[in-house]
Length: 162
Image 1 (cartoon, rainbow, N blue to C red):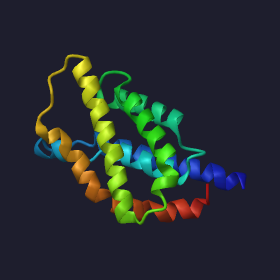
Image 2 (image 1 turned 180 degrees about the vertical axis):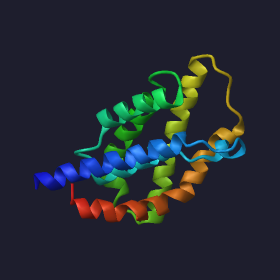
Image 3 (image 1 turned 90 degrees about the horizontal axis):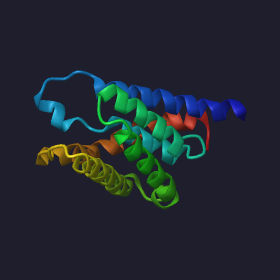
Image 4 (image 1 turned 120 degrees about the vertical axis):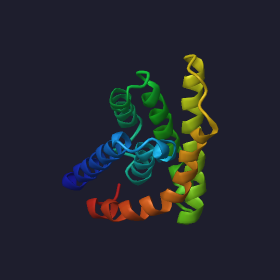
């Protein structure tokens, strides 16, 4: 049993590291505004799948690493990923009972909260407000969530239930 428990933690950590890589992967200028928040999507999935092993503390640590990797204000991603992980864990029981197409709507709402928190930090630090394309990644994630969930579910089943 202990092996399965640690297996899901390592699977989640590997997925989050891959998501961080996809976040910092260099791409041309025009699709930068349309890059989905890979780390947020992976964190939400693993908070749904294994809330006893992936939670607020891991979200905070991953957020600090994201701050260092992307060169943003230290604590910006840590705050947003911590709140996102908290919301995902608190709403997990209510969201997981729905079919995937309905789960997608609730995940989108959590993603909008994450974007609003980031916007709040940007405004509080006096940075210029982003353009309307700022909201595009959350809309793209709305369509990406079912595919990501279907892709990661076999990994969740292989490492065992939470």
